[in-house]
Amino acid sequence: MATHDDRLAALERRVTSLEIRRLHDEALVEDHTPVEQGENLREVNENMTMLLGVFWRQGQDIREVKERFGEVELRLNSVDSRLETVELRLNNVDSRLEIVENRLTSFEQNVNSRFKDVDNRFDQMDQKFDKMLLLLTTITNKLGD
Image (tube, rainbow, N blue to C red; front, side, top):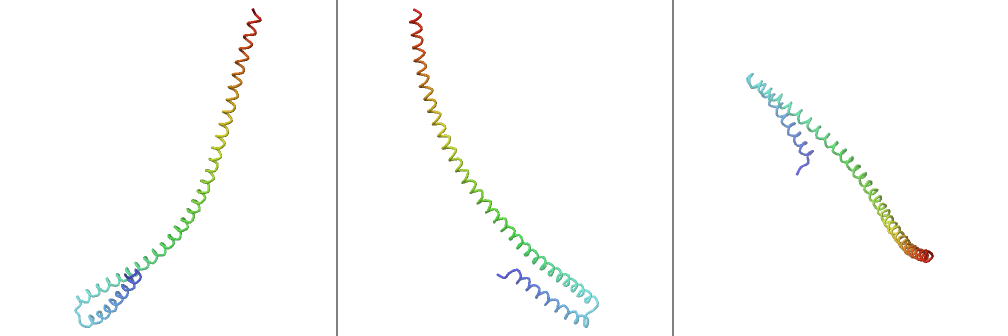
């Protein structure tokens, strides 16, 4: 399949060929044609010249579009690179947050364990105070009798 530039070059060659043929026919027409046919041919020639201008401008537009697509591609590659950098940084932050989470979980377990130990000691002290209260009540009752 021919590239766009190849097709455009072929079209330009074809239009140039038609222009040459037109000029040749125009010379023949001036020599052998009536006025009405000459005017018709002149109109055809003018239209061909306009088409040639249109094709030439479209070729320029296509080249400009290709250049701009190249610029867009470069910018997209730059954006991709930046996004990859951001992704790496986010992964780094993610791993650090996991480490912090693990430390906090360990800390929480340690604190909970210590609170259980303190609760157990308070329960033991409550039992001892209950025994002392019972003994004091018994002694107070005996002294009061």
